[in-house]
Length: 104
Ligand SMILES: [Zn+2]
Image 1 (spheres, rainbow, N blue to C red):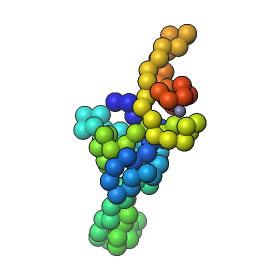
Image 2: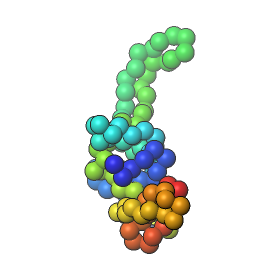
Image 3: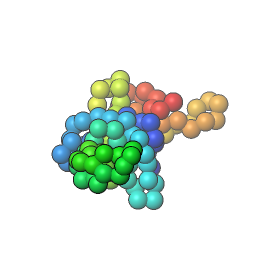
Image 4: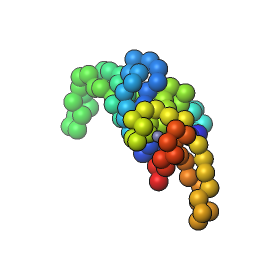
């Protein structure tokens, strides 16, 4: 899994192709992620008083990890992610294109 919670990613396929958003949740076993603002689905909900109103709720649905790529703010593009070991021994992910660290 190259994508982690909090990463900025871009949808590379599907209805929301080209849109970017922040990863809200990651499901490693299913290889799926939920990305803010991407893959909205409408859900019809029943009213559950007192806290919930009935009606149509728009909510992000999970999408497969292969449908998103990590977005590099420096390149302004979706990019492949490389891995590098830093001098202090921690592993870091970086943009293969420009070398910018991702999610530091
Ligand atoms: Zn980059």
